[in-house]
Image (tube, rainbow, N blue to C red; front, side):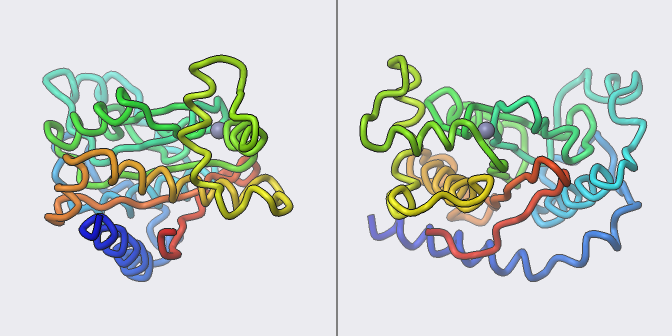
Length: 241
Ligand SMILES: [Zn+2]
């Protein structure tokens, strides 16, 4: 357990240091700056900057036009080389490839309602970490998440409507232990941010492969919250809790 706490502390430190080192996104808005092919193993800060640049393009409606064409497809036929793993919600309003304006082959995406992690989700992340080379893991929630609301609504009863739904919300309940009794925030923004931090912690706790990679500086984990109206991803730069 002691090692685990040390890792969480390291994760917090990484989050703060990395966030401070990033130049203003607007300065990079116009530069796609990388190819879809061969980007695996890229420095996690660089990959994170690519996502920030892509999100700025998305917000401004200035999307690349070469991300889904035949050339992009052909570049990935022989294999995939994603530069980031996205753990995000299944919500139809939050498609990661669009939100970050990334090409085919650039994101390895694991989606579930509320980013609730089950064994398959964790195994998918582990597979990518071990075999595909991305060094950045992004856990992204969003404003007004129905799964976050469902988890908050079932803190007492634990009943969400089916055994599978019960399991999904049970994974999220611990993330709200200090928030559930207070008034809910507008758009469940505070609760959504607590949830992504909790999911990031759960991933480190439950996956020895992810924990080992983090411990050896092979990967970085960052969290963010997507705003439905603006399209902007707000990166959480506070300490993990
Ligand atoms: Zn959601």
